[in-house]
Amino acid sequence: MSQSPKTSVIGFHYTLKDDKGEELDSSAGAHAMLYLAGSGQILPALDRELQGMAVGDKKSITLPPKDGYGLVNQQLKMQVKLAQFPKGTDVRPGLQFRINQEVGSPMFRVVNVLGEEVFIDGNHPLAGQILHFDVEVTEKRDATEDEIAHGHAHGPGGHHH
Image (cartoon, rainbow, N blue to C red; front, top):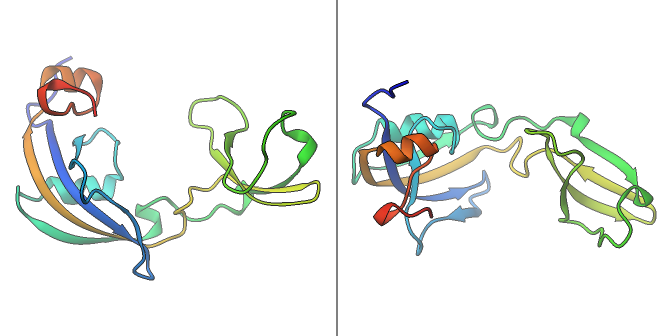
């Protein structure tokens, strides 16, 4: 099955802020992020915006929760017993785990521990938040056959980042 010749690799620098203007993540001082356009490696709404930009373009992109990490699903917020965790587990806020190993099962994180009660949340930490990206496109090129076959971009010299 041949891919469309338009599959491209896009490199970009970004700064992500929340609605309060606090910086959540940034590629400043690091390598630009490289990704295979349309591969699902980044948020689809952000991918669409970047595909329409040229090298050197800078843009501020605001994504509502539905285009970001989704709305908060209250059913993924649960209370479980400490005894349900494997013995020896250091159960504390920030611990991340999957309840099962099924592909696509949510990653849960411990939010709070009160005595024997553990409060967990399977929502993405940025669910329900408006995301503000400042982006600059640094590179745009056709993807290599290897990149298309592997489903992701390779860094300089064909190496994985």
